Image 1 (tube, rainbow, N blue to C red):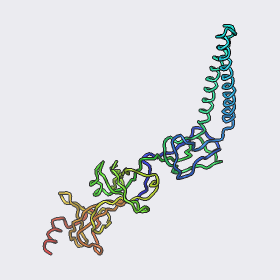
Image 2: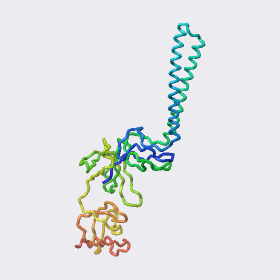
Image 3: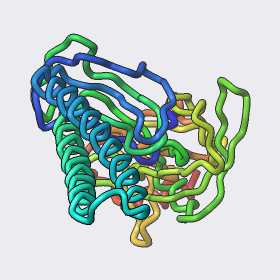
Image 4: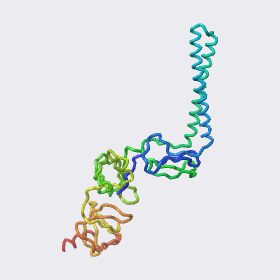
Length: 305
């Protein structure tokens, strides 16, 4: 059994260090794109934003006043009650006021962008998987503050023995059981990573869940693969030998032969099934070259019994 996770989950950090002034989310909370997650304490930048906001407000008021004055002078000029020079001056003043507003907006945007470098916003709709730091805590630059899980696509990763992994194809639809909800959900095999040279012969199989819901994140999911109901045994790898055709077998201490089916590994041991019960049988685990009785002799001994 493994945990359901987001297909795209990642840590988010800032390039600036500082104390967390405001933490706007909790673990497990669903959030929307562009929502504020956290902000570091930065009094100078915050003051700069407030100052630029005030400057922009003043510029907007001045621009509105200049526009109203231009309208008034234009009406007077149409009635020959204002000179052309006065109209030109009103137009010039209105343009200067409008340009000032544009400049103040740009400066405010720049100040906000600088402040945003001390803030984290949700890159997509998703869920806060983990909070690595809390409000008031100092966070060094590039240290992750939150683990974010994107909404919409969930996956589960399983370690599957090779005998079962070969039955699974990329794109194959499989059934996943979520015990907590007592519910089966459909999934698609998206990846099947081959085992490393060293270590157990287990394939890492990734299953994408169709039509996921955010409430599934973090829940345990079972992946059932039809397999043999035979007893599974574990034994030292030295006990397993191979016939010329590659079929595995073992010899007990009396040199009786047992045909087996290998199904996986556990460390340096092998897992196998066999058609008969071998609970009380002691197998020969000496390296094959030291066995005095060869395979043909063992076969002949078995045929004589």
